[in-house]
Length: 97
Image (cartoon, rainbow, N blue to C red; front, side, top):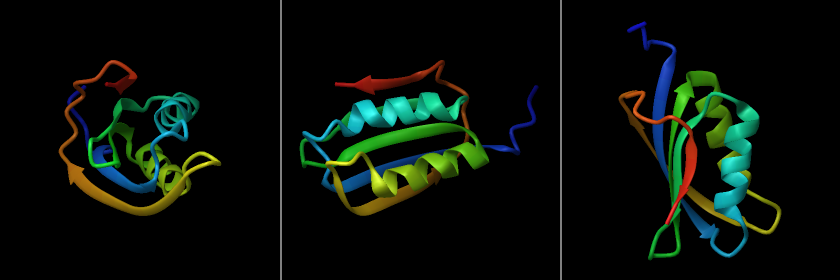
């Protein structure tokens, strides 16, 4: 099945109060709730959180919308989204350290 026209990939850097508020864990849980989202999420040294989402275009958009809010204790100030070519390289959605 090489028809990837309905699948997308987005890289995102989330800034604000996004570390120490369970952002990574809640992002992983949200990806699992969406179903079919693969990729990863990781804290960055500069205090941001970076994630890569792959899956059906609508579900990737749903994840990006969720990231604009984040978990209850977070304060998201900015989302820097980069659209990338879908690769299908991930088997699941993981927290990276």
